[in-house]
Amino acid sequence: MITNLPSHSRRKLTLLILLALLLSLSLPIVAHAQSAQVQVVLFYSPFCGHCQQVISEGLPPIVQTYNTSFVWSYFGDPPDEETGQSPALVAFEGDTLQVLYVDTTTQVGNDLYTAAVERYQIAPENQVVPIMVVGDELLIGGIDIPGHLPGLVDTWLIEGGLPWPDIPGLEEIVTALVLFPDQVQGTTTQEPGGSPANTPSPAQDPDPSAAPEQSPSFEFDVSKLSVTERIQLDPVGNSISIVVLIGMLFSLVGAAMRWRLMDSSRPARPHPITIPALILAGLVIASYLSFVETTGTEAVCGPVGDCNTVQTSEYAQLFGFIPVGYLGLFGYVGMLVAWFLARRGSSSLTNYASLALFGMALIGSAFSIYLTFLEPFVIGATCMWCISSAIIITIIMLLSVDRARHIYTSWRS
Image (cartoon, rainbow, N blue to C red):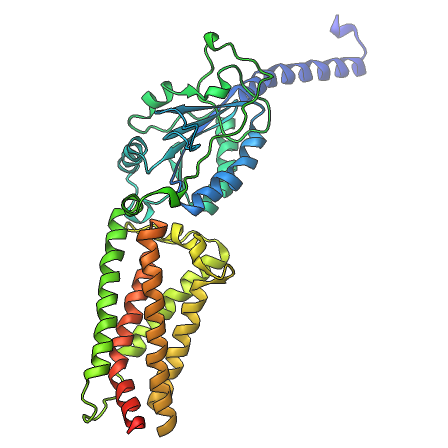
């Protein structure tokens, strides 16, 4: 019968048939894409400033984009109603994107993190938080995670979805997730902030109109911890900072005794050539810390310490608005100028410059003692960059004390 139709009618009919075929082929693809899920794992520390930034600012817009409904579930001990402390593992179970938040300061979270390090052969310099596992890919830091996650999610949705990462022990945890108490009676369609991993059982009688009172808290109040507990948050790094703190205190006492007991009749020697080398090293460290503090960039911390927690703490700024890195930067520049004038200036200028060099090193050492004390005993984390700077400026103080003492005594005589 089609052959009896006019040519233009046959062309229209053929076009309609092709469109119908294309539409029928696309429907399964759309349905498949809508049912696909992407499941990722985020390792974090509640005492990490960049982790808090990712959780509170970076991830919410992303999960809101991909999810229309979600529930919160957890693994381990139930949430503490008095302190508001979140369980060790919390899952945001969305209909498309699901995120498992793993607290690495807990035993179960640390075990899972260790398993992930071994499974993906994570290099020591990358063994930091926050770190997100997406399939076989790792996203590290507060810039990398929100910047690259959407692209990976889009890619995996096209591929048909992505299951939980192949981390030993993770499957048992996911299957044992339990809904938060305020969500046992239902799920929510309000703004997503995470992703669900398992659907409530019929016994839980979900009510789609019910919504949880609030999302789980991922923050801990460090001020409520004892000194011992704060030190244990970063045991290796904090132990190093305590040793350095003791050494700095002894150095300060030693410099005071040398100032008091040194024989002023002996001629003063020029400043050793190691001083400018130390100043330049300190200048590089201070410049890097200033860059981290002002841009919010993830610092390269290495396998020991947690410098990002220190750099995002309230003590990273003096008076609440002056980055401490700037103080170090200006201090090292001032000492470099003083050393140059002490070597090249006129006689009187040389003396003033030598005293200024020692004075700046002394003030810097005293301030570094204060900052080093804060790290293990108040913040609960140690910045190895800061520790290195503290050691450098203390050595500069010890190397410059003799000439400053000789000049001071000569003036008094």
